Every structure is written in structure tokens, then in C-alpha cells.
Length: 350
Image 1: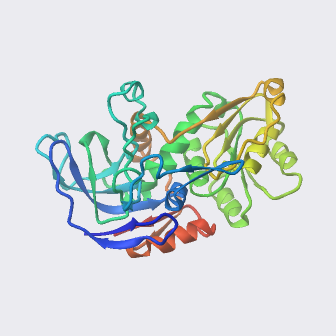
Image 2: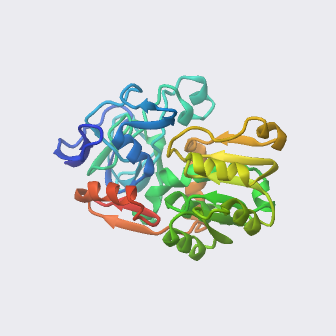
């Protein structure tokens, strides 16, 4: 089978020809029909994250071994099952839940495999969906998608479940207050659709790119604010109607974090999702003075993904814009994403 792998961090992906994986035990095999290209893949491609103050989190030191096939947003057809795998149907279409844990620690037992300290994420620790086939450890990680388009469904495995889990952290506030969404890319587009499905009051989207701001308005945003404006915090609060009770930072830079905090109301909640990098810009005394809640949100758990797919199958989540690209253009897709040229999601279709 053909796959596109990282052989060296920071270098172009290499097209490899490898045998189709065999399955044993509880393993199952998916013929990939769609693999989303995510901003997290850029960090993985580079080999780490900028922690600010001259520090870097090295993925090599965190157990990411090369060569590696990226791709954690994967959907396709089930073509083989191991002798101990049951409850799934050969020939049916599934979305793959990639955030797999050890299954034994407290986080895993509590249903939060995505928080596992010994994670084996597909596309990060295990070979992922930038390939013609992907092997999955257990059928419990397959979610049936029926006749939904795999290219439209694949982003639910990361951009979808990430924004779904983050929005749930605001609780009932999303029905009462607009959510300020910092970042209008693939996650921002997905956030708008999920917020509507959850009965949210709406979103004010902030982005530097006028194309993404226009796309946000077309997708139903209450307003779209230029993140590069000198008075951006004032513009955001004007659009919200006052200080914001709910801010979702999908960028995760010092600038976006500062904006989110500056626009926050007393007692408001700032949920951090983005991984752009850097160090925190907040004045420590203002955190208690504002009674601010600052939460981190890491993807989502398996139950949240089931809930999200159920919403999609019920027609309550409209598809985000998708650019379909052949597998052999994996490098082009990553570069387009890095250069801010993708509206919605780029999806590789082998």
C-alpha cells in the first residue's frame, strides 16, 4: 500500500510502499477513504511545540518514533477484522476514534483515554490515515457513519470532537451568551456548526484573514472581527454587547490568549484549545480580580465522539468547507495549511 511518512522531522513526507497491515486479536483494518489534515499535524511534522521562553517540547523525547504515517482524522471502509473483533460489519463505513489510551490507568477507566499518560494515538504514536489502509487496535474505536460522506465526516475525529468537548466546558452559558471564537479556520468553522446544534446563542469570530472572516459570516457567525485591529478587544466587546462570558481560543498564541483574557467578563471562562505556542501573557493579579476561569481542553473522549457522530447522522451538523486532495499531494496540503490557504479542512482522499 502507499503511505506518506515522516522520516525526519521538518523534512518533506516520503511516499513509501509498504505491505497492507495484517490484523490479529481485536484489531480491525480500515481502507482509508478520507484523512483530514490538521494543524496538529504541522507540529508533529516539525517535531515539537513552542513552549515559550526559548523552550520546546520535543515529540521525540515524548516517544514519537519515526518513520511515522500521520493522519488522525480518518474515515473509510472496514475490510478486515481479527479473530477476537466483533460487533462491526465488513463493508460498512466508519469514523476512527484516534485518541487511544493504555486502557488501564485511572483516566482510561474513567472514560478519558485522551488524557492517558501512556497514550497510543493513531497518527501520532501509531501509523495513521495518510495511507491507503490504517490498522485500529479494537472495534470499539469505530463509529458507524452510514451513508455520510467520509470526506465530510473525517474532520469530526479532531476538529469536531475538539470543539464539541471545548464548548461543553462552558455549560449552559452558551445558551445565554455569545461565544467569542478566536480563530476562523477549520476548528472555527466546525465550532459554528456544533454551537448551532447545541442550541447556542451564536458566535463572534476573530481572525486575521479576511477570507476566513467572510467564511465565518457565511456560516452564520454573529460578527467577524479583524484580529489585527489595534482596538480588537473593544471591537469584540462591542460585537458581544459587553465583556464576554465565554471565550474559546482556537489559536493558542500569546496574542490570542491576551485578547481572550482582555475581552473576558468578571467570572467569565476562557477555554484554551490552540497549540500555536509561546508563553502566557496574563497579569497574575488580574486572574483573581476578574475571577476568571482558564481551562485547557485536549481533543475529546470516546463518548463525546459518539454524541457528535449522532448529531451528524441526525443532520444537525452541516458540513464545513472541504478541499479534497489526492494522497500524493500530502506535502502540498500541509504547506497550504501552514500558509493559511485552507478555508475549512483539506482532506486527503486515497
